[in-house]
Length: 228
Image (cartoon, rainbow, N blue to C red; front, side, top):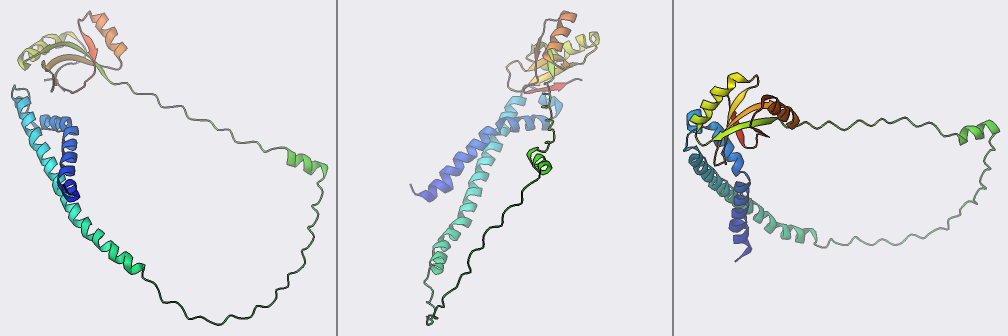
């Protein structure tokens, strides 16, 4: 296998597959956001997301292959012309005509002068030189305070969105905090009923104990919220 086939076919296919693999979750989330609400909450949403993601991934691989071939076609002629230019630059130049050497005259250097003695410092001047100048005080800034991720309490999870919305309408009037229905793209039980947000995990646990809820705290990893 020649190097040109490796650079123009195999290498761009591997790079395009790697890019499509890394951006798969981002593409699926964008496809989910562009779907209408009724289609997004249906059972066919996941299959449609997978199909569109595969089509976009193939497009990314094809675009990478075309970009590599275009760059290869543009770069190879330039590298082929480089040796000719280098040979022209390395061609020997004609030697300049030699001129008869001029007679050198003896150079008479002046005698070195004796260094002048440094003036002696007085007592006040010695004291002033010995005392170092005060350095400015540097007050370092404190490090920034880390921002905590919002935490929610998961009340329950369902396989269909009708049951999740029914529970949301049933429990929402009993709490001062918002009650949400969340959809997890890659979960077997995707529809979650959540309450929150809370500023920290500790605040969520205190609310759970005060309301005597059978729930557990969690963050919104791969979950999109809907309130109504």
